[in-house]
Length: 350
Image 1 (cartoon, rainbow, N blue to C red):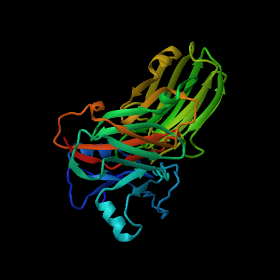
Image 2: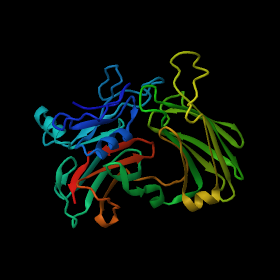
Image 3: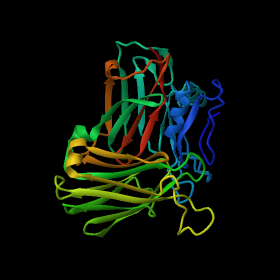
C-alpha cells in the first residue's frame, strides 16, 4: 500500500507501519516534496517512491500534458540483490529505494554499511556517504532531517558563478488538492545591460514558453504542479543591471472560458525587483508566495558544465540537528534541467 497524491491527497492522520512502507513523492500529477516531509515529521518510517499515474497505461512513462496531468511521470529506483520478483519485493518493503521525476538517474545514501531505508544507531565517527548519477548535471544537493534542510551543496557556486548569466526560477503549486497547478503569465524587464540570449529550462511542452517581447523584455507563460521551471538569461554584464520580474498567477479552468482562467486568489500577482550588484553579493534573491512551496527566485548560475556523477561524505559536525529520538535523514537533488531525485531516509538514533 503506497499513499500518494493524485486528484486527492493522502491524509497521514492514518498510517499503518507494516503496510505503508513507501509514499509517492512525484507523478504525472506533480511533485509532492511537502507530503514526504509531512509524513517524516510525524515520525513515520516511510520511504521514497514515484510512479506515472497518468491514467493512460504507460507504466514508467507519462509525458506531461496540458491539464491536471501536468508533470512527467516518475520512476522508483530499487537497490535489490537480484533482478527478480522476490528480491525487488524485499527491497521495496525494506525501503531501499529512491524516486526520480522520470529520468534514469540514481541516488544513494548510507552510513557505512547502513543503507537508506534502514533503522540503526548512528555512529558519529562515520560520515554519511552519498552518490548521484544523472544526465543533465547536478546543480544542488540537500540533506533533510524529516522536514528540515540541514545541509546543502550548491554546484553552481562550486563551478564558479558567471558574471553575466542569471536565471529566473519559478515553482510550486497553488493548493495541495486537485487542480493544484499555478499558471504563470509574466515578464522579465532588464535595464542597464543588453539581453544576449534567452533559454528555457524545465518547460514541459510547447504551450509553456518564453519569448523576446522587445529589446529589454522577455515574456513567459508556463504552469507548475509542484515542479520548477526556469529562464536563463545571458546579459552583456551584471554590475549595473536592474531586474524586475512580474507575473499574474491563475488556477485551472474547469468551467468557463479557458482564455480567462480564475486568478490565484491567495496571490493573484507576484513581483520581484533586484539589482546586479545585489545578485553578485547574495547569488540569489527569493520571494516565497502564498501557496504550496510556491516561489519566485532570481539566481546567479554558472556557464560551466555541471557534473553528472558526484559523490561525497557529510560529517556530523556540519549538520544542524535538533534533539529528536530518531533522525529521518534523506537526500534530495536537482539537475540543471530541473529534474529531481529523492532517497529514502536513513532512520538513525543519535
